[in-house]
Image 1 (cartoon, rainbow, N blue to C red):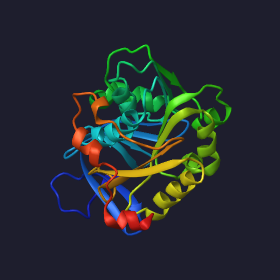
Image 2: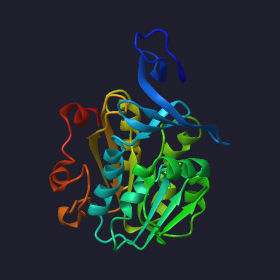
Image 3: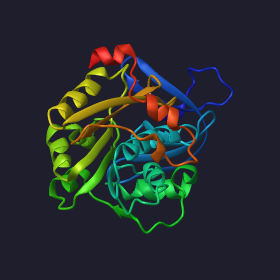
Image 4: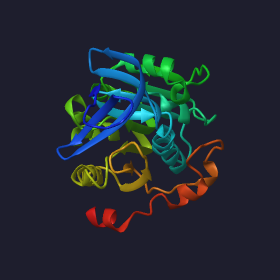
Length: 282
């Protein structure tokens, strides 16, 4: 919700308030509204904030910022790539800000990147206004498919080495992206050594969702591992990702490309080391 916030005593009155839970609201001071439209699917806002720079907001929820978005995008992509013996073709479901696809394209041996995003307007806006996240050279390996990711996974006839679900929170249409049926359909379109990864919410505020994702994937895949990263704009800061594979998961640090802002070999080596409270919750 963007409004003139008269309750806060600051010189500038333009604020965006993200109402995360009944007892939690996060306020962002805004310099300028850059883009503000309603697509057929959602309300899309790109705002320039004082602390986090340009920020993508979908249906009143922060999705990514130019200041810390690289943390999420690098962790959801580089970890599964370095865990796979030799990925050639990758599917991204969601990821309309194009940050994940930009990271995957750093690997020259990947031959095909299919990105299935339901809202074409998010992709267009990100490419135009969020070049720090989405900006990249023309790459013929990337195929943008504007469709429903749930339906695509169900009807897909191709096989992928890695499937990444870069989704928003499990609210509204995105709920189906967290279902057992969807995870089973992903299993069917993975090669025998295939890897699946998704964002699995805050270990602090949404423990029950994180645990449900983990347990559901355990019932379908041979090996499931959870890892975390600190993303300042996400509620609680600490964020989780869950990886599932038809084989045992083992990350090879020597596969990591250079030029990243967050991920390095040390983080890859330790990413599956979880805080004690997270281990106990699983």
